Length: 524
Image (cartoon, rainbow, N blue to C red; front, side, top):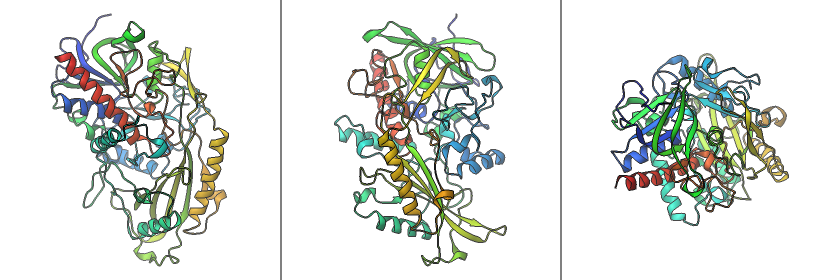
């Protein structure tokens, strides 16, 4: 098999000598973060980014909230308005495999429909498109605290990396609300939860990766915002190749001296296979496909795919008794143009006394003439789940999924401790909903199926020691390899109650620093 340079849209000769400095597998938020920070550290480093999916719309990595195509925009916003991430694939969980990926357009597909054995986590989904989940996500970026933190005994370093992640994602502390009604909700929540946690973790507006604006839709951070060359080029040392599935990492040696020399890539459209070479490889596909690729490459540490985690997802909705709170129905806040909610608010988790993360998304219902009818308080409560090796991904030696990769079987169940917390979360959703108006828990509250949040973690978890319980060190370098790294939510080793993107981005920050340092050393 010959080695030759991939080309895409006539972009620059990134790997003219046949070897990229850095190969990034995945063009989502984590891959974009690695690319941006490596580029900030070294303007000359040559970066090749590869993604199996193609572009939704016309611009790679552009968040679907911000696409100019009105049909795409309407389809995305209709689904995201539910507040349930699993709905981004459509309302129904498709259990019948959809066939080979050659027939699939870009978008999100339930893991079941993708051919995985995912009945234990039926809400889990795969983003099969350029930009990955980064063009679909709600952009909520609550920061981790307490048991969610994995600082390795260096809280100052953790804080610095968190600041970098916020900067790269363009986090704003309160982009949507609080409106007058939203402030009433915050006041009620603050009184109800008074004394549970420190002031900085009291109920507050939800921090989001959203650009503030005086009017109109608020632009979300997608991969093209994090690293603009993904969308617009203009970087002679960067190339994005889409529609190209990395099927195997090319491994030389094993043990502590192992390294990868590049990757085998298959064009999805026609099955053509190619090899690309790279000095450093970073895999940030997602929490399902990153370990899948390592397995397909013969890289199979005991922890690979284990410690699969996702917080439980309890949802509810209550109509606010506006008269009780002195609000005028006629002047209830309306969502600004291009937005689906009036307020995006946050109840942070605060340890054992308040272990749940709450995402509150409110909106005003209107009649056919745009007149306010009612104000809805939407409640999403995430309950932490223990990290256990029994919750895992199992990869087949013989069966393949829609992409022709080792078929994934998901083994996942809640422990007795998890179930106890879920019961508490169900009770708390009811307790809080009843603060605002009449509430029927039988019809207005639900525990969603595992996978519904799409906040999967742990399957390539990092660790401080090569003791078998982790796949990579704290920089994301895979144990036993000198030049192979992983990054993203799959690398997160802790049970996370909150939305996981910001926490996952911290792993990308650390990996980017290590990769930039390695590239600099090789250049000397």
